[in-house]
Length: 237
Ligand code: NAP
Image (cartoon, rainbow, N blue to C red; front, side, top):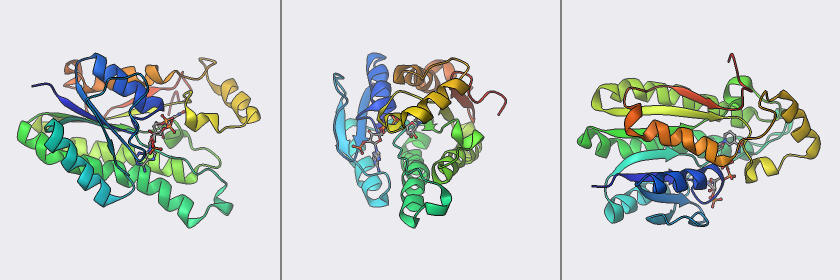
């Protein structure tokens, strides 16, 4: 049976590129986002509406995927948001939304797919963290905390299920050309570029390639790993 792969935030950016690569690799890919938009130009098996900041929406969405497409063998918890501002000015809503979406959402998704994976005695979970989870980033206290939290979550879960054929890993991108970074002003973009050894932003496909490796058959002995795809920006951290 073809493995079902759920990619959250699969409507655009890194999630869309991941959906494209996993589809090309022969997985049965279902994407989930608030808009339920399928990624442009990719023939995914399905596209569902899910708000990962809402526990009830996660529960309903996971049930829908399992019923319609089969047990989920691969989870790529990629959906994420930023609400950047200096902490002095950060609202409770800015804190809550980013933590609920990026961190609690990913943890709940992982919990939701575990039962099926334990039954199957196999599974692959990948969380999308970020280089800023390790480096820190002024104006991103909420976001960096959510991304650092994912590392502790993945490594803890990797220990819980390591002997059950389930791997849990992290991909930590640097700066990637997507809608998320399109919000940055020109001055900040130039400043960031100067700090990246590769001297450029990543293409979303370069991050998707790392995800494809971690969910694939060659990565069965890789778990609890943090795989940077950051052009060298986070070296040494
Ligand atoms: P993006 O282009 O802004 O796309 C975000 C995706 O997440 C969209 O599909 C969006 O769809 C979905 N999404 C947002 N909130 C959601 C929610 N509450 N429930 C369900 N889906 C939701 O982002 P990206 O740049 O591809 O980033 C993808 C992941 O990589 C994120 O976790 C991000 O933090 C991480 N990352 C990105 C970069 C970068 O430079 N771009 C660097 C490091 C890490 P809807 O709006 O339709 O819901």
